[in-house]
Length: 174
Image (cartoon, rainbow, N blue to C red; front, side, top):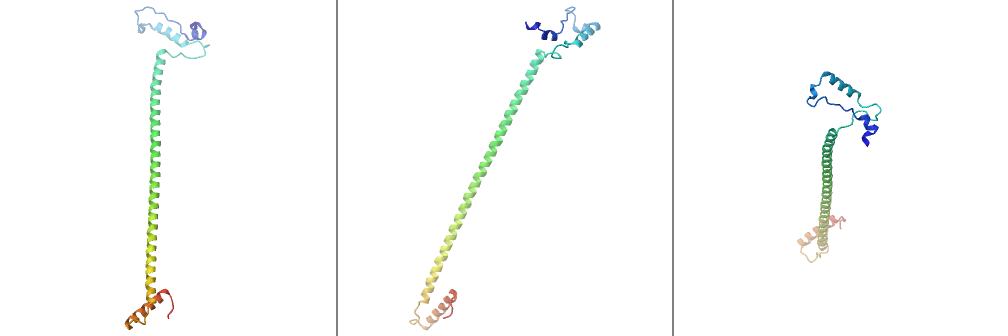
């Protein structure tokens, strides 16, 4: 079997014989304690590849138990960190989308205002043209008026109007 191989015989401590089953380990005489200390100092032989005593079952179980708790805590912490990272990324994405929507909304509103301003300007230009056309028609009517059939006062009035029209249009005196 494997227990008789050199690897295990080098590391296996020599068996200690009890002197009596009724004695407690503390009731040993100082001489026996010294003999035990001498055995422990020798330890495993120097031919073994490993130095020191192998881990016992209880210590190994304790170590595994601590690692499981630590590993479980690590998994929990990693999961929480991942969740927070995902949440932060999602929040950033929401903020980016919200900003994009606001930018689009602002662009649409700006475009609407520009179009409204353009329409208002066109309406204003149209009214000005209509007023100019009406003024021109009125001026033409005054200029084409036959003054011979009118009374003297009406003739003076229309003659003054004609002079004003000519001055406004930049023409010279008649």
